[in-house]
Every structure is written in C-alpha cells, then in structure tokens.
Image (cartoon, rainbow, N blue to C red):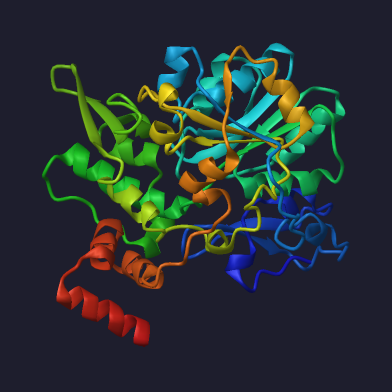
Length: 411
C-alpha cells in the first residue's frame, strides 16, 4: 500500500486515490497546505494497485521532442486572456467541435483551483490563464476514463506530474486521448495561497483599518475566499495571476473585489501590481512555497508521456523577433505523432524553432529548482505570524533577521 514517509516522494497526482478498488485512500492536507494520500488500513486488501499507478515509484525515461514550434493564436481576445500565445484554446476548440471533452484547471465557487471538464467552447474560458497553485484533481481521472471507454475524444491538460499520474492510472493507451502538459517551474501550496488571499483581501476591503491576522496553524479556521468576502461585505470579481493589459512582458497579478456603497452603487477595489512585486509571486519565484517533490521532479525532460507540451517563449525577442509583438508567444513541443496530427488541424501558423536555443531560455524543461535554505524557516514563521510577516522575515536583508534565520537553521 502507499505509505508516504518522505513528502518529497509524492507529487499529489491522486492516481492512487482514484484507482483504489476499496476507496480506502483519502487525501489529507499537511502542515504546509499540500494534499497527501492516507490509507484506511482496516479496509485495505493489499492489492498493490495504488503503488502500480504511482508516477513517483515508476518514472518513465527521458525523451526529446519530435519538433519544437512557436505559435500565436490569431484570435486577439483569446490571446489577451491567455498567459502566452493562446495555443491551448485552439487545441481545445478543435476537440470540443469534434464532440470531445476537455479537462483543465479552473477556479471553483470558493476561488480555489481544481480540475474539471468542459464540453462547450464557452466553458473553456475558465481554463485560460495560469493558476500558480497546485490544482485539486478530484475524480477527474475516473471521469476521463469513463469518457474514453464510451468512445469520446478527451484532451486532458495539467502539470507534467498530473499527466504522468493519469497515464499510469489508465494502465493502457487510448487513440482518442490527447495529453497536454506545460513547462512547469513547480506548484505552490494551496494552503499558502489561501492564507495570502485572506490577508490580501482584508487589507484591500478594509483600506487601512486594522486587518485580520491569519496564522497558518489555524488554516482550517480561515474562511474560504468567498466566505471571507461575504464577511467583509464584498465579493471577488476576478483573480488573474498574469494580467496582460500592459503587455506580455509587463504582466501583473490582479485581485479584483467590489462591494455596494450606502447609496447602492458598486465600488471596486483592486490589488494590481507587477508579477515580481506581488507578495505571493515573490514567494513562488523564490521557490519557498513549492511542493517538496518539485525539488526533484519525476516528470522533467518530457517524462510525463504527454503528446504536447506548451510554454511561454522566453527569449523570443532574440530567437524569433518577428514573432515578438508583446502580446504573448507560445512554445509548442510535439512529443508524439498524435500531437502532430492535432496541430496540423489548427488554423494557426507554426514556426519551427531549434530546441537547443529554446531550451537555453527555458531551463525548467529539464531542471528542477533547488530547495531554498530558508524554506523551513518560512513555514515556521507562517504558522506563527501569517503570510506577509513570514515572507518579510524570510527575505528581509537586515542583520537581525539574517541572524535569526541562521540560528533557526543551526538549531
């Protein structure tokens, strides 16, 4: 049976949970806000299926893409709402138009990130844009399997480890399954995002009034985003991790809230700051809040088994300046003939690119990030003082904080 003695050996794909014939495996949130499988041993029959479908226990071999392209969706509206060039939407629309089903990550009613499926073009809008939080897979592997067995085409998008988990879960190949992953830096903690969002929303809604302090140790008692918004007398209108209103190279984090004034008029509030200036994104870019398995990812180097891998074309201004209009350019790595066939049906121009040059600007394709030396200190401070104070204490350059962090590491 699955036993998680080392948190770095579980990517949280939930393949084991969904494959268990006795349904005796559930997911539990740990002290860092990540979900891990937990087995009810009183019902386990030691069939071993949970171990057989684990991508951490059975990593695939490294691969090289068959082809590498740069591309831009000609639909300006779709491209603006997408993180890069909008290629995913074009892929998904082809599958939808053929009567298929598309799985992707979206915000749920509580503004938490989860996987779900779409059967119409309109539903695809929720999948656009990056969500820098590990999504809850739920039972979408089972749903995808049911659609596949009924003969419907399925496009399943997710992180490389989620795609690796899906392929092991299915235990066979389907000609009408298309797996799409993306160049992944690592997945941040849903619990940390919940703590950040609670503090940020309170600060925005109260506008200078004394704000709530949410310590991470009390995360179960922190209301979800929609409930907190109601308590603050407002509502969440939108969350965009990469708003491109000012262009692709100056994308921003945007959290939009609104509430009614005494006269009944709508008052809007917005936390809108540069991607690298936003506190949550600073924690992400410093690799402080990534899942432990991300520091030794088992799905790098195209080992997920995906048909297509998507990403931002960082370095496009040097490698392909004719495609650089600051609206976002996608990279597309073709990993299978099935992926190539779907690409050929898209109304998009694909520009061949040398993989070695592209890889030089996108090292996350093959390299995992290093675990920060102050990561444990950050989570200790998070439990004691909440998100913003934890980030400040971990990244503050002053001598007292540096001595404190060093003492903590020594102890």
